[in-house]
Amino acid sequence: MPAKTMNNNSAVGNHCIIVGHSIDAITTATVMVSLGNRVSLYANSQALENTLANYNFEYQQQALWQLYLSQHSIVVESIPEQASAVFGEESANLYWLFHSDLPASWQKSKDNKPSWVVHLNESQTPSQIPLILSGISTLGVFSDIATYCQRPWVYYVPFVFLQDGNTYPSMLSPKLWLMGEKTKDSIDKVAVLQPLIAQAQQSYISDIATIEFSRSAIMSMLATRVSFMNEWSRLADYKGVDIQEVANIMGLDTRIGSSYLKAGWGFGGRTLPAEIKALQQTLDNTQVDHHLIHAVNLINNDQKELIFRKFWQYFDGAIENKQVTIWGASYKTGSGRTSEAAIHPLLRLIWSYNITTHVYALEAESELAGLYPEQPLLKFIAISTEQLANSDALFVLSWPGTKRLPISAINEVVVPVFDAQNAFSKTQIDSLKGDYQGIGRRK
Image (cartoon, rainbow, N blue to C red; front, side):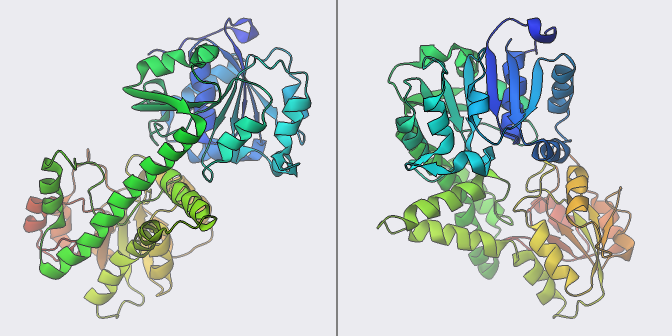
């Protein structure tokens, strides 16, 4: 779906008030303008700049953002200390709030209600203007907010469809659109969303509490599959079985399918860790047992250190002052984000032994450099193989599936490979002259 360009504030369509600074909020702003609307985005300016800098690998998103700013189709405003200033906007046709981005002053409780809800209820904002909420929180938060709001048209849209590295297209044509509504069968009140729902491969609309629960269940199931395969990878190591081949066989069973069956260093990013944390908080406040979710989190955290332990054991602990090459730093290929990625525990452990790290970080270099600005053991390399001859080991954390692995270069120096992503095929593993250890895989 091509983006529509518009001229300044003369654009036809709705005036959408968006509050937030996350990539979700920025993507929503660009998509809303592309659908013929104009946007006022209220955000913390520093947080907004940080998000844009961290997502500079999102080239289409960045280009559209700059275009719409220059056309004044998106107007960025500093978020005020009190929500009443935002809800006083007379020309607004829609409010879209990103819950995690709201400032603390908006979240303060008044009569057990967030202060922004009190300001909205007390404002002169017409009750027929729809309010959309997005974000991840403990179960029941958004349905409670909808109840507190003295207006009928309140909706909850979880961003289960957003794909890091491909945010703009993934919102325009979502794989799964979930939407909760306070008032049953009121979807016609948010006509601005109809193009997105129409483009979705799958969509489902229900009450807000059900959609909240479904969002959490979906994400927790994906996290559980990842941790399940990682636990089995350790048994595969012990038994000398290739876990990747096992996963391929499992995927043939239509009752299981092939998604999220790849063993590796675990899951990271923003969404899955935040979802598991929110669910644990929910369960901690109930009398419901939650051994499974607790185990999922424990396995995931431990898995991020597993590849280091393989490295330590390979050299019988004699690893001080060595040099290593690391390929990839992001939490998944194609992304520039390193949040909750294995790179951080790996670097901390390696640096504790005074090991120099030559990191081929791809899109994640700028974020990693910003996080460790004065670390002398961190050296970035522009070519993946340039320091292999000087390295005692090669770690693979995140390698693009579309990029050929330089097997011949590895074989020239016969460096041992520690593959935390299981990026090497069985044929490639067999062709290596040196040693190889993956997650549930070895030569």
